[in-house]
Amino acid sequence: MPAACKTPLSADVLTEYWLEELEAEPEEAVEEHLLGCGQCSRDLQGLVGLIEAIRRITRKGLVRVVVSDTFLNRLRNDGLNIRQYAVKPGHSVACTITEKDDLVIARLAANLKGARRVDIVRCDAEGVEMMRVRDIPLITDNDEVVLTEATDALRALGEESMRFRLLAVDGADERVLGEYTFNHTPTR
Amino acid sequence: MSLAEAYPHRHLEDADVARLILGSAQGSASEAEAELYRRLAPRVRLYGLRHLKNDHAAQDLSHHVLLLTIEKLRAGQLREPEKIASFVLGTCRMVVRDWWKSTVRQEKLLQEYKRGLPTMEEFTIPEPDNNKLTHCLHRLLERERSVLVMTFYSDKSTQEVAVQLGLSSENVRVIRHRALGRIRDCMTDERSVT
Image 1 (cartoon, rainbow over the protein chains, first blue to last red):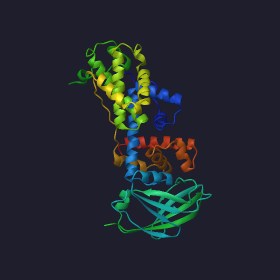
Image 2 (cartoon, rainbow over the protein chains, first blue to last red):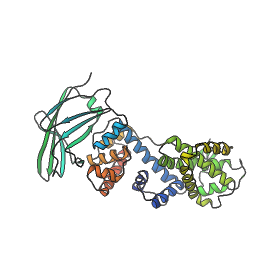
Image 3 (spheres, helix red, strand yellow):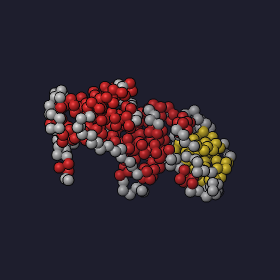
Image 4 (tube, rainbow over the protein chains, first blue to last red):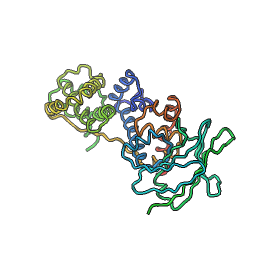
């Protein structure tokens, strides 16, 4: 086997190369290195494989993720069927998922101004916290939190009422930004 | 057939393989040509994927560049085999630059140069286990998952993702770096769910 690479390209450099974020000179150096180095070239192949897999999983709606409208528009332009439920604080919505839906989006309206950290909490029917997602990203200029829910989890649900709470967290202090109820009915 | 029989030059450096082809008559260094093709074609294909954004075009580019490279070596025109990566990069750039305006010329060139050249290419983009990757993505922090998904689904730049998430570019880079590291660790952890 040829000698192992003495100056392997870091994962960060490979990522920036693939995202076309390197300046012309370092990009040229990286490309020359990649064309002369089987090991780093295989590392890049691995990264490309990971990126492709993340795309596949996103397209299938298998991850819960907070996203922006710009991102949703991109998914829509790619031909994905997106079902959306917009809920105001203190309100509830009847929801479902059908065979045709690629993604299901929840839009939780809230006044996020001044919030340094926001958590999403899932509660039981009595309002007792069951699960908490900490420190969700806050999309700029949005008065709502937009998140995709994992479609396989939604498809497995029976008739169920789910209560969510958005909390602004500042140290030990928590302030309720809104509470939202999703009354899910499976589509037969 | 053993590995040594299948790839007799596999222990050599790229430049040494190129030296075996340098100035050789057609067909007299076919094993070295096959070895060079086997090594360089996947690397050029990645270059093509990155620049042409199309797998078929990348495959054509890879074949085309390797044909030109081997022809140059046969003709003894690549005088410094240790600089083969540099030569291949220059050829890649030239071919990509003319790619969209010269499909007819490419066809002609391919016909002209397609004379007993080896075309063995082992190129596969690894496909991670979807279930395991989904599990690993869910183990990330929300912020990390948003950065990875928004960056990689639509090839968004660090700057664009930073603007959408209200973060600094540096922060997005740090989050992306940490998230990729955690994904890799999780994917190689045998205890992870499959």
